[in-house]
Length: 423
Length: 160
Image (cartoon, rainbow over all chains, first blue to last red; front, side):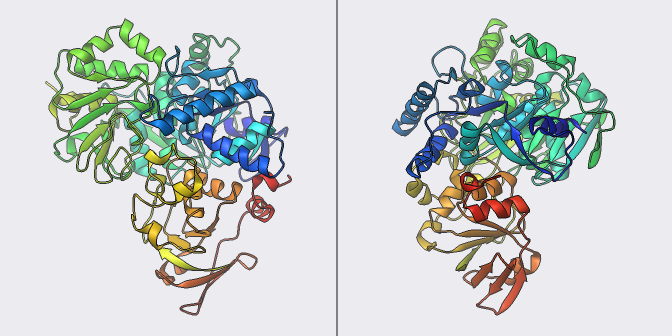
């Protein structure tokens, strides 16, 4: 069995599973945030009206909560949702609640790895589509809606159809100025936004072995944009060390069997990769940066679960050091822990000296909610994950998706720029 | 199940146009319905009627896991979405929450059914009748688990 089949077999108490089997899997960790939490409570209300007992969760120690989409609250409804979330964790005895304004908090997917919330081999579900991110730790990490999360919270398990797995093999080390973001854009450009629908996208090969855990997180994060049920990288010693440095000393190397089967194998040569963008209005609308349209940008945005991890900020700082931005540029570290490291290591000074505004962790502008949304006809280059119409603001605004290096280089020139071409 | 069709002849209708991100903070189902399809068709709310169906191309509902998407459509009166294919979370949310039926169709139905046609969906026969044009098309059958959850009226009523 491959790693996903092994995880789902273990979680459903079976010795063997195969693609298309339907299993009820026991869940190891579940996450809700300030959008899915109130959504789940609404489901609880409906159940209560039908006489279902919703007074207790199956296991509050396995539940954790993030505040990320609408913090800091821009208006009353968002503020009220945060109050609902606080009441939820208080009433149900959930201790792991990362609150805005109280030490460590940030984007849920970022906390999943920064706080070592998920272990290799876990079944981890979250009320957010980019839950796929955390598959980089060797877990089966899958996004679900409110009803399914409510079901998990009450029953501790959920049904899955065992997915077919496609294996994406990267041979060799990515060249300088080419990031994991470029590789995942390349893959989505090749297979399309439904190329991974219902499937697992697994990453491996010498190029993945060589990659940092954070880069692997970027790959798994955007498997969502190919429609995948989950993304995964087998957990090697790097993952174990990464988790151990964050206080989780019980993580273990976890891999598929030697005779693991894959539906398709796609091979990529790292040396052939170059900086890419996804043009409006789809993550599959991919172009080489050097051949991208020469548009006048209004804004560069370096933020989100996809593009504001420590390594992303470090890459942006390399480009921005000693430069001045020509367009409105915002950098929002994805968690307080990352923010603090960026401060301690001088990255924030580099950003501020370049004229960048540094903001607090939030999903805000990535999903067009608040904190820097786009006006009509504005054009943005962004390290985020989606560029559908209206995604980051007005339905007639445009977003180009890129790596942090490309977003930083473009901030300096005001046009879509390959970091290798920056003087 | 009879109803009239609102047709969007395009692929990849994503959750950001079905219910834009700024409304994710809204959890009142009736209010969500007033913003359904706002990113693509601002007139949707004024034209949709109770019992209507949406017809579209490939990968309907791609993007976010927001259950707001099937909720907004369902509380607008939409009873089923017919599409060449569905993104997995939208499909799953529609069925597990018992909001609407996601019906997978073939090219003949996609091209044969026009805006405003009255159709009759018979899931027991996996058949769609176009009452306006007097044509019949096959729908793809539900998988066993999906069929059972639909029959039960959602995941919470389903006994494994």
